[in-house]
Image (cartoon, rainbow, N blue to C red):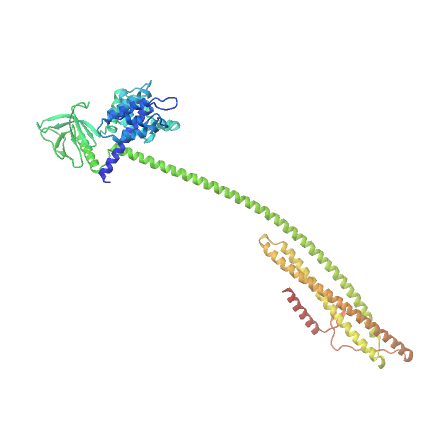
Length: 598
């Protein structure tokens, strides 16, 4: 669409909205029955009056057809709106008298809403306030005027009456208003201004003049008005006229009562206004050039001249740009600003709700996490208690096993000591024997072989005792390490448990080795018993031979063979093996131990 088409469409929408507001007041003033419906006869009267003032041909058949007797829908504003749009508003042309239309709607609604009201203003001033309300009210139904528009209207009235605006007084009133409803209906606005709440100290005529001036500006689109002199086109004489500047025309009348119009100056984007020098005894001159005529006008003083030139130039600029009058543009901007603030407030409220929901979800998550932490802490305490109990049980079991092993070792030491004592006594008897006859050579050889076997057994016993002592030291070391492990910090629990498992495995291996040593010890004891029997047999033979020698030849001292290498000294006497043999056996035992540990 072109710019002119958009301007035309916007003007039509604005006109329709103005008509709807006035019709809404008239419709809501109609009487309703007990069921809340408006009678068809009242709708007929209202529709007929609207068609008359809007200069639209009335179609009673369409109304009867729309609200026929078998219609299930209620006869209300929801049911009347389709008829109003289709048969009245869609046919409206800009050829009717808006003042007459507003008067008709005012007459229908004021009779009911102002009944018994006591006002300090005239009925005509109340009508003008009603028209101003329709202009400034929000485009929502039921119609109300918000606080910002109330302040705008009261400020303009105060300025029009020549008074000073008291913001503190309005703030107090605004606070009381917000506590109640934060907006006013048309009748509440008329009551507020008509009661003199904001016009104290001013007479009725001043208030009426202020209302009239605001009415002319906002409703009649009067941008400026006042007396000036105009030069005629034919007689060239100067005549005083009352000029009224509107968005597209300057009308001039005989007087300010506007009863006799003498002509008008049409304005468009091609017009211009220029200042003229004084001439012909006239001062403060300016010129309005139109497409077909030029008008010379004289203001009363330089200030009025400048104000009129500026007002006319502003109007021409608005026509060139296709913008609405300043008060309508300001109203639209205020509405857009309120809508923007409302949208931002709704968005803020929505964000606050979302943040509140997110906060509640986070609180629930935190509560769940806290509960999980409490449960985990409870489980950890229980597991720690069980672990300590298990550890104590293992310590007791290890202590019992260690005591048992110590008892077994003590018993074995006693047995070995006893056997060693018996062996020493036997060797003492053998050393006391002296040389025997050559006939005793076989017996001596047997005794020598028995002695070698005995030394082998004793070496085996010594090795077993040494290994047993080493194992005992390892067991004691494991026990000490276990006690140190118990005292370690909580951070090393897992590592200690792994070490404990390894040590338990090492302990099991050591136990297996002890079992193996026990088996070897038993085998050594069996060999010892066999050697002992052989020694006893050899001793018996030696005794018999010695008795025979003593009996026949006298006591003979036997000479026993000795070792060439120096002997090692042990806890039980001279060792039966050399130091080289001992080192070899220790190296072999160490290798077996390392293999078992791996």
